[in-house]
Image 1 (cartoon, rainbow, N blue to C red):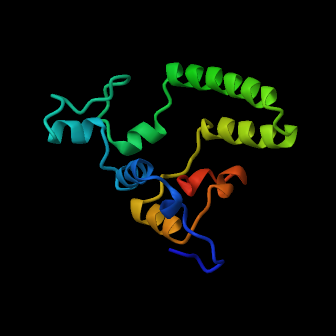
Image 2 (image 1 turned 60 degrees about the vertical axis):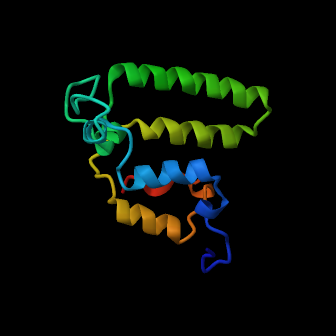
Length: 139
């Protein structure tokens, strides 16, 4: 698939397992409590951290303190790795700020699976992430 700008779409460039992962998450039919119960892989659909019904949206939006602590630790490790690799400081800042913003609470809603699918179909590139779009999952 080629966009109007003549670029090949990200989905076509991705390896098959990555396309499966993206597709499952775009349609919210992935290994979360809701579907694990339907697939008879689990007895309950509850989030193991908070006990609320677990669906894909819950996984994307939930902010447990243990998750936030782990996120900050991994950001520190990433910062050290980027420095060790002599990554340009402005690129380091863009990556780290974008990842820090991901955790900030927002008064927005997750876009529908169809909106996200159409965005990928139009040829959205991973470069958009570096520009701060973070896949456009949050409006």
